[in-house]
Image 1: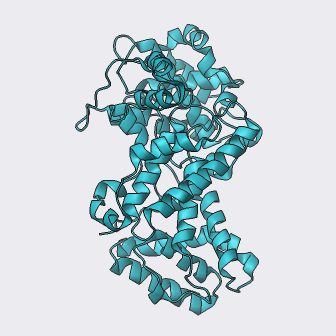
Image 2: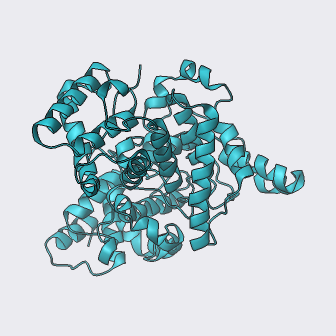
Image 3: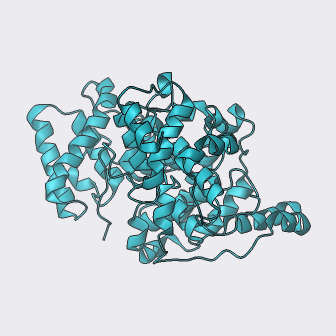
Amino acid sequence: MNAEEFLANIKGGIVPVTCHEDVLRIAFIYLDEELWTGNGVFDVVEKLHTHGWSFGEGELRFNRTLDIFYLAQLAAAIYRYSSQLEGDFPSFSDFPAFYTAHYALLHSSVWRSYYSTPFLTQRTTARFYRLPDLQDLPESSFPLCQPRPSPVSAHVLKLPRWAYTVGRTCRRQPFLPFVTLTTVALRTLEATMTRLHMAYPSAPPDSESHARFWLDCFTPDISSSCLAKVVSREAWRPNSFGILVAQGKYDIHRLEAEYLAQVLGEEAAEEMGQSEQVMWCGLPDGGIGDQAWCRGWEEEVGSEEVVEFLAAVAVEETVGLGLEGIEMDELDLLNRSHILLAVMQAAVKDGQERERFLGELEWRMVQKGRIGKERAGMWVREAMGIMEPYIRVWQGVWPGAEERGEMLRRILVENAQLFARWRVSPLSKQFTFELEPRE
């Protein structure tokens, strides 16, 4: 039977879906069109879930990250088959041979080589697509449609992606000194990397020299007093590191080879880093950015080391505020962390007092130009819905600074969508917490 007949029989219950390979075959059919149009893997996962299909079982069933991961692996296999996205692409009749040839990318347990179980089973990871924490998606550390030599590392993107986020935070953040931000970044990175490496020895160990090398690549080497002058609207857009790598803006493997040259010596690094010249296509990019998005090279929520860093920065930004309770005048509502602290304060209030406080918060957010009037109320109440279950433990009493700071950190680590640093698929049913850039 052809692809249309197969799908019709599956949907009609004539042919049952009984195994991992069946779901792959269905996804393969959908990807044949969606990989080149719309939102690629993000469109296909919605189709699979609508019909009750998932690659996961038990607690991993309908895990958004796991299901999109397998779609990204299918896209990677098609990419390998098609040789730089040119020539013939595999057809439905080719699927058995295609699956056999790319079994190493597609089999039912391959996710274990990419994701740690604690990370994959987090509530956030189940609801939002997150990139692997054990190794990179295949080919995603190279520019799309450019030569793909042997990679220097299986997870070369982990530190650059973290350093990229730190650099953007430095450009967006006018309150904390540059040295404070980098200190927080290195501290939280060490904690998350050490924890992962202890549980999974194959994961890269923490190395401060390695981390500082990548920080030097992505952070501005200027005093904190000058940071506000280099802020651009680009810094406020959703993170797009995977797309920039796909476009060739960053030659990740060459830069990693430079670091290895410092550690291992020039000769060893030269062997590991030989490659053709990477070219940045920039914008317009001929669709490279869209293709990278369609293949799942961009996350909907960031990695643990990135989220821990952003949460720690938010706590630092709110130190000394609201020691006895929040007064709206002491907050800078151009700052997201101050807005979230105000929502926490509202969560301990009752009835009319809460509504009055939230109403003033919404009005001030609009006045600051961070959000439109038509969306402010929904933004605040969606944030309240996330925070309120955590705050109930306080039983209506505003706690001390240390307890309050730890609760803010916990809320943000477990609900990183509040940062709105990443692009969420337009088909996602999750609320987006985006704000307008700080002028």
